[in-house]
Image (cartoon, rainbow, N blue to C red; front, side):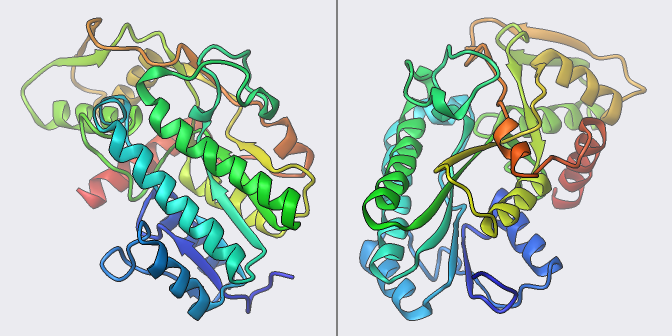
Length: 311
């Protein structure tokens, strides 16, 4: 039974989701939180990961460590994305099993689902169709992690749970115009327009692709909620259940960040749109009693404030 005195290892504690999980655990009174920087533990090194887990003997593991990025970096660095993510998750999942750790949560991504699957996306749609080509290397690595957890649960009766978050943003996000996800990239672009002289906001594609976003503290809340929850399923979606066009996000962020300057939105249609629509069905999470707490406008404002602080 996981309690306030349990030893909890958070892999990827410096990242967007991992840091939010650590903040939430501390706020809830968990004191034995185990973390390691990249300089102290290379998660792609099998031997070192196994020895670390054997020595620390955690009661629970969150796998929030991953190589992540937006359309550009997913497509350009495909080999890095598939190798690093497969290595990290394989090492931690099997390392946990080998050392008697029976409880963990593996953080996946909504991009594991087929490009053109029915909306909203149910957990059962996994592997029902072709993936989005621009990020299939990353998606396949994450699908392998899901199937690995499912397989260990089936064969060895472990309690490995897989959480599939939608597009996540907030403190410790990556704000890179080319290599980050669309929302932090938008925040950075619009802030630069606010402080600079330019008055054109260039968006990739036609702006009509629809996306669902969630504030990272909601993801952390879901992780800790399901850490302590008994569930029958191996995989569970976490999101808001609401999606909007890229154009709509841009207009809302312009009002929040730069309300006093007239900005023209320009679409670069030579660039890809990515998946046409992606919104998760979160009815299963709701059935177990979890719901997101942050409203979109307030979440975007908090996201922008964290960008200002970190910048």
